[in-house]
Length: 169
Image (cartoon, rainbow, N blue to C red; front, side, top):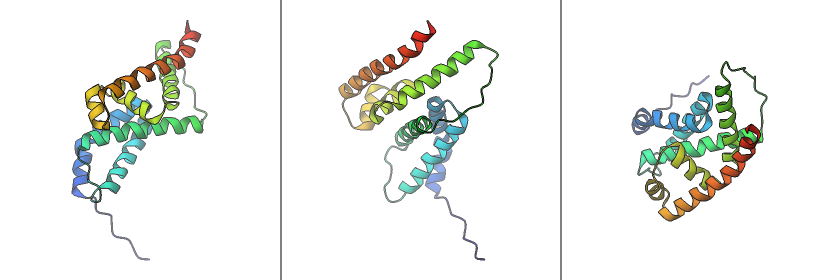
């Protein structure tokens, strides 16, 4: 049986991973709320970068990786909605912790219903703390378009969350 030679990881990919894996993981974790999902996103993002290396160089690697992490995380949330799983329910010691977990799940479902561009802009702005100007530059759109998208997205999310908050009042 012939063994295949090990795949050599390009040194630029290794440098990118060492420099930015924390950024990608933390971005994914903030959006998915789950370390296992964040690890999956981390692998997905760097596999995508590996495929791009050489043929299509990435100009601003940090910006590309942050956006890729946001998009891959949103894909994970959307896939959860398409194939719901039965999870083991843990009874938290603190009700506030349970409320935060439930709110995170409601927000995740609401984000999964957004158009991809709106979800990306919202996540960059409010989960990653990127300014409107930086988002506009990264996406190649105007600051006004970013602001309008954020306004509309917040209004849409507020409607979704009112259903949850109305039950809690």
